[in-house]
Image (cartoon, rainbow, N blue to C red; front, side):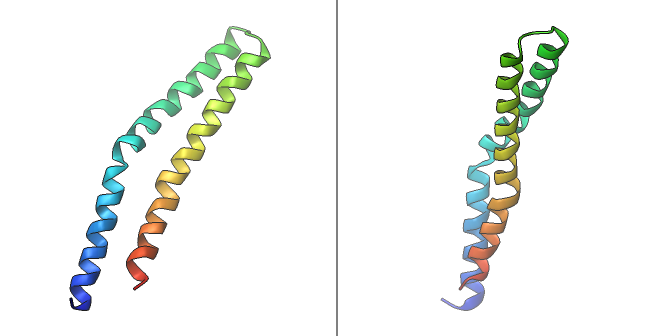
Length: 84
């Protein structure tokens, strides 16, 4: 296999890996505003602080997952392609 073919194969595998996470990315993106709105509603309804703690924890988990999906995985794919 020549170098050009190997690089194209690596890029195609990286693209396939990112596409396999598409459903997870979309569901995380949709869930983020829902958690944020639930926290705002809990605060406006003057619910106990424990409710707001739960919604804040969920919102933080969503942001952490979003960061992982959009920042770390493409970086990992680029490293895999360029590491021969």
